[in-house]
Image (cartoon, rainbow, N blue to C red; front, side, top):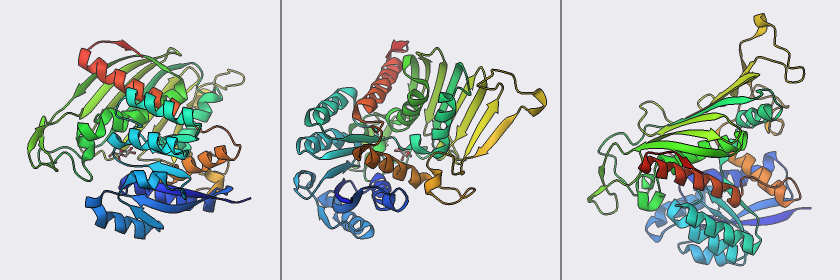
Length: 386
Ligand code: SOE
């Protein structure tokens, strides 16, 4: 049985593109009953040229410069929120109140008070909802989690996550405007904590369970920047870099580091886990490889013979690996855009009686809370309980 799923896309930037591509592709590779139809897209009146270009490129049937109008239209089933962060709350709440299915890009909100209002709205309306933390669905990261769940790492001692970029180094980079709104705290909420560490925290808690306590330090290296909208030099309110120590409820110790000042690092996200029976390591700049060190057999607990131990590079492209049987043939790699397709494939499956989708808004609110506690700890310079 096939069913049209009429999509309203709010936002026509980077994430609007990744999501539009995923809606168009999902049924080519993951056949589902729901067939997405790109019904309408929203962008600001002042970005009309860009919006028209976006509409034509992705094949949206219509466009609106008033997002409320689009959200409330009768010919829309699902609202996909890919606007800058400060709009997420109002868009999600309006969509829920209009009875639409809701998808929202990360970070879900500017702060956890907003996140709570969004959770209340979707739960009160009883609408299906998801937050797009796409990296959970990199096949090698899904395999990382699978191997942990299978007991192959054993008792965990350490978890180490890094997420570094370099595009804001330089006094001349403005804050605000079309592509640099992530530098404006009034639009983004926070800097690397909400933008990058939110990804690391979502994956870390998915793999390890909850973080119990954190202590953090955050830095703003360039204190004033010209604002693209006003042309005036204004105080910078975001964190350029943030690092924190964490203690997980399972007793493992975590370290997290994130910056936009790591020259040469473009989208460098790594995670490593060290346990009693083995270790795992992943690097997003080498996304189809999962490194695995096997010290002991998970079933017998028996130590692997010493002359056979060493870090194994698993090329995560076999049919047996997460998501890969739906793509090409073993050895052929996939990339960044596919992680969004996997998200929608799982979300549509959940609408059709499959496993409940994660992370939904309630789970993503938890990530928002951890981010907030991290920034609070950085302000106080003290350990804080989550
Ligand atoms: C920031 O540069 C950014 O685009 C994030 O907002 C995304 O979430 C991340 O996946 C890539 O980097």
